[in-house]
Length: 601
Image 1 (cartoon, one colour):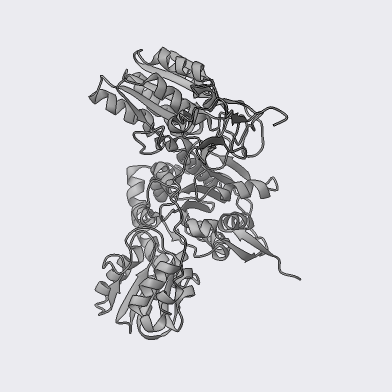
Image 2: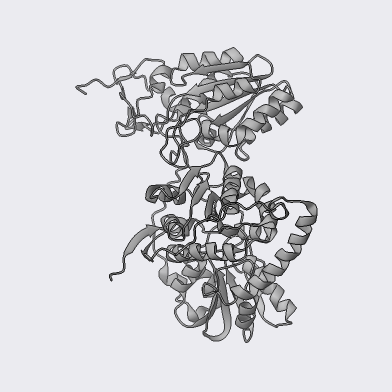
C-alpha cells in the first residue's frame, strides 16, 4: 500500500493530527499564529466534529472542558495572549481534571511578529502544573498532537500544546498515518466529588498533581520526543521546539544534543544522563530560559560541575525569535570547531525600506478615525484603541490611537482616564468582534458607574485582522449554519445605554455629524460606524485624480494616508490596483479634483 504524503502548513498538520486522534469538539478564538488550526478542522470535518469560533478564549476553554467531562476528545485553540483570557478556567481545570483527552493549543509568537507580548506558554505550564508538549516541526506536530491526547486521557488532565510561529506557519512533507482507534465518549457521569471544585477537594488534588508530575517526569524521560543524540567532546547543546531544527541545520559534526519535547514536567532522568561527562552546555531556546533553569536545578541537585550557558549568562539573546543565522552565530562562539564560520554564510543583502503596517486602502476604519478627528479638532480628547485592524489608526497622519493594552481594554482605560481628567473627552474605539469577545463587560462597568465616555464601535461585519472569521454579529457559525445576528445596538440598549447613533463612516458629512451629536453629552454615548471590510464587499467604482483641477496641495495624502494615493514625478496619482472606491479622498479634496472613474477610462 502506498504511503500518502502531503505538503502541510504546521497548523494544518496539527489539525489533521487532531482529526486522526479522534477529536470530537474543537473550539477557539482566532489569533495569529493559531488561526488556521480550527479553519482546517472545519474544512476537513466529515460532520462528526463540532467546530466553533467561541466568543472568546475563556468560553472556548469552558466548552472544551464540558466536552472532555463527557468523555470526548476536545481541542481548544488560541494564541499565547489568549491563554491569559482563558487562565481562570484553566487554573481550576488543572485541579479538577478531565475524562476525555483535552489538548489546549497555545501558539507562541516569538518576535513578537503579530502580538502584544512574547510570553512563553511553557511558563504557564509550570504555573498551572500542566504537561506541555513543544513540537519542533510540522511533521512532529502531526504525530505529537495524538500523543498529547493519549497522555491527557491516561493522566486525566488537560495538556498544553505549544507550537511557535515558525512551526505553525512553516511547511513540510508530512506522512499521513491511519486514524487511531478511539472509543465512543462515555457521556457525563454525575460525581460531585470529582466535578464540583471545593477547597478541600482542591487541596487533595494538589497533592495528587504533584505526585503525578513526578511520575510524568520519569515517563517523559523515556518519551521518544525527548532524546539524546550522543556526540564527541565535553560540550553539549540543549534545545527544544523549532530551535532544535535550527541547531541540526547548523551543526557540521558530532556534538551531544539534548532535545526536549516536553519542557514540563521536565524529563529529569534523561537530562541527568545527558549532563554527566559534559563540562559545558549551551541552551538554545526561544523566549524564557525554561530549559536552562531546569538544567541548573539538576546541576545543583546532583552536585555536577557542568556549566550551563544561555540566556541567563547572556550567551544567547534574551528576547526575540531564533533563526538559523542567530543559532549559527551562537554555536560558532561556543564550539567554533564544530560549526562552519558564520562569516562564510553572510551574503550581501539589499537594505529594504521599513514598511510599517497601515490600514488597507479603502478601509472604513480610516474614514471613522478621520471623522472623529475632524469633529474633535481643537478640543481636548484622548483616543483609546484596542486589538485589531484599528490599532493601525495610530499611524500618521491619522494618529488616532493613544493607548492599546489588550482586547476590550479601550472601554475601561477610557473610564480610568476620565476619572482623573474629567475635562477631557475620552473616546474608546472597539471592533465588532472584539465588542462581543471582551467589550461588553467594560460598557456595563461604565453604565453602572456613570462614567462619561464615547464608545465608537467600528462594525465592519467580520473579524478582519485574523482572516475574516465569523462572529455573533455576522449571522453565520463556523459549522456553516445560519444563526440569528446578535445586534450590538440592542445589547447596548439592554444594558442601559440610551444615547446611540449610527452612521456610515464613508459618508464624511454624516459621520462628522454623528460625532458632533454626542461629543458634549454626558454618560455613556455610543457611535456605531457601520461599513463592511473591503475584503467582504468589493468596490463598485474607483476614483482618479483629475489633473486639470489638482492644485497639488496634497491634502488627500497628508490627512488620511491612504496607500493608494501616491506622488509620481510631482503628480498626485491614485493607483488603480489599490483603489477600493471608498470615496473618502474625494470628499476631503478642497479643489474637487478627485472623481469617479468612468466606464471608458
